[in-house]
Length: 353
Image (cartoon, rainbow, N blue to C red; front, side, top):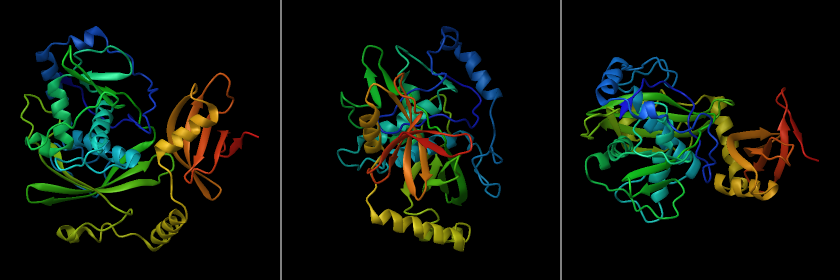
């Protein structure tokens, strides 16, 4: 296993059943897989990126802890999981039926790290990334400190699981490849709390600059004891904030001033909240099913993000098929409208008649 220099790059959007059409996701060549361990370790040490305090995923006023840089990927994976699946953070006390929260986040992180970690015990197709036990344990430890400490086990992996599989012959886990599209993480607050760090993070749409989710994440020194570890920290707690700009709990009152919304932002948030209460929004999974019903299951679909047309919000899926002239299919958040069309160069839309 070796780690290339990590830089912020667009990687995974695992939406709905995780439509997989990621460019450049071909099989890794034999030369990469056969690089010697000694050469790999030397390369990783030489390419250490330090603290990355000026990275594009953090507010310029925020100072991150030393050796934080690679932790942006586990944080992003958990945020994408929460935004896309809406499942709670997985813990040793999670209830039955919440296993996808763990396996989905592992698939996201595997895809995010695909360009930087080479550790393939098998690579039988382009759909799954097969990783060795050490790498899988390292990934799980970075997102779930309780696993790194030995207090949590992997949840049961059912035979029909969409996001992960297990190759018994090669003793390797396979994780579904994907693409996050325009979703990007951003850190707005970082405060030291004893041995931990309390972060306020956002998941943003880079095209619209809309905040798709706001989160409080607590990280602590990693408990993973493998010989090589790409992550100096691990996630100890992950909390979804009900609205962007919500205050942290009482232990972080000193951050409230930093996270206050302006009057205009408060007004916009209230309007959005009022609109949401009028109708119960459908999930991204349901929206994908409606899109597939509209153009048929033979076409290829990929989630692009949320768009606003007129006064309404839509899930936007790209669609590809020889029999379809449209490039996109939009599904309203209420689930009442499904329309196909093409986005013009000026930002306007031309819809099917």
